[in-house]
Length: 132
Image (tube, rainbow, N blue to C red):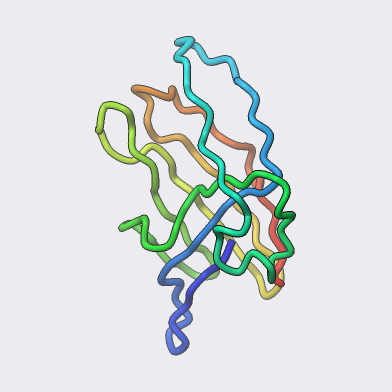
């Protein structure tokens, strides 16, 4: 995850977030809705890939790219954003939330589209990140 912050207010103004060394496994769901695999990228296509020490031989999935969300919300040592688009175009389907201290950050993702994805969520604090 790479964050852009306002130097004066310290508010997060944009973010890029991806997962490296991606392995995709089909997860059973109540509606048996078949979902295609998420597209993957080469690590070299991401900004700061060398500083993040990403393995360029492994696939990357980009969950959020620069400027891709219009709903970034800041709080006291927290921020969240909504992303994704439901197949029926009914709106966002993911709500990402993160909390942070000076060197660590943790977060989770909730599925807010109960029509198409039936509310499958991550565990609380599923993501644990450290400052580089």
